[in-house]
Length: 149
Image (cartoon, helix red, strand yellow):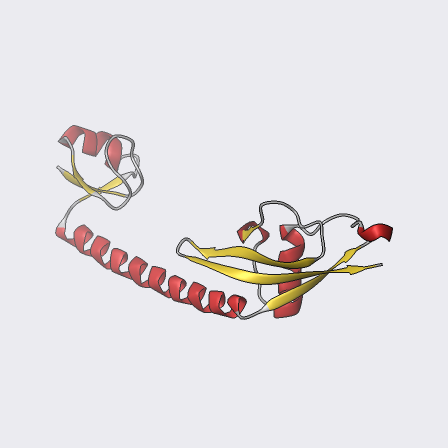
């Protein structure tokens, strides 16, 4: 019997796959536990339409991420950091602070988890910080860290 999987099933297949399994396994396990549907022509057509819709949404998300990436590439933000005597900084600039400043200065909502910062910034200067917007799109943001007393 051919079954369309609704979820990933170990040793059988991934969600959306059409797999051939024994009739008993299909009826008693996959269909009963709502892990799969019988592969009728109606269900196969529904699957095809759903995949086409998912592909369209994925393409739209990629385009939106590319546009946002272009905006970020052409922008820069300034972050003040408290400095003591002798040029020593108090604290550091983390990905959370960068995300907050992007929201304030550029009015773009970016999750702090998307800001790829190896180590916190502890000195003044200009830095290129990578922001992962999509699995295929990573933008580079110029961050200027200035000292304040």
